[in-house]
Picture 1: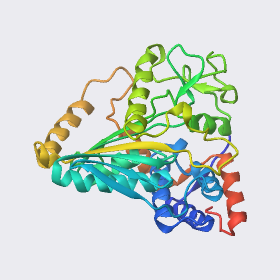
Picture 2: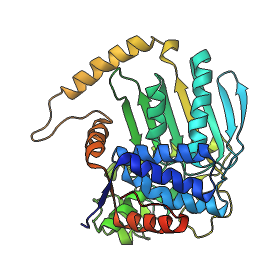
Picture 3: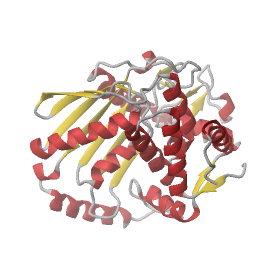
Length: 351
């Protein structure tokens, strides 16, 4: 495995925000895109952390993503609406949709916003976490360009189509599910390729649908579930329905490839956020009390020999604590890309 550079978190965030401003993004886009990436990098979701910065800079420079988007919200019913994001960077659109959904849920108890004309939004868990931090339960989903075969399939069909759920617990951190419906996100394949590390079993296939371990040979991803991948494929369909069918946006096979060379045309992607106010159900205090009991029972359950039982998010919170002390690791490809961005925009390197 190749050696990684480690960078202090706040310094890294300032570099990212400066790069966004340098390419012409407005302050809100620079803020939100950096915020979402730093969630990934801080919590060990490196596939959706700052290694996305060069890609985001390219799409902002090319015109695929609006540097200063004009977003328009239409409330369709008391607890539902559509946000036309105006081809905004995905984090900018999703944080705004989350604010709108919370505003409605505070009145209605539950609310959902379908996002139209958005783009790649990074770690879905960043938005579920942001809602839970404010005391709300949230579901966040998106679809993306095809890269995941169906169960027993031999061609790309769904995107990695993430699903995230955040629930406040009364603790410092929420209960947080953040998962791709593929066995791994494609950005993790690229990360493993950069690090010179083999893939785990049952996560990627070649062009004929045969399993591969070499990330350089991965032509498509497997749905989550291994031998039971039909479950992962169906979950990918759930994200597809919420993100595309309910918003009228493109299905995964219709979305231009994220890794293409041409970044001049918007990808017309969709996403979806739903927010629930606990006060519309048993109340926030009761929810937190039940979640406290639930987590205590879960973490106290008997593990198998040599193992440890963790709640969703526990691994991430522990990694965040380490990275606040040791810094965020950057893989060699990201280091090279940051060198290029620093030279391009006259920025000081963050290491």
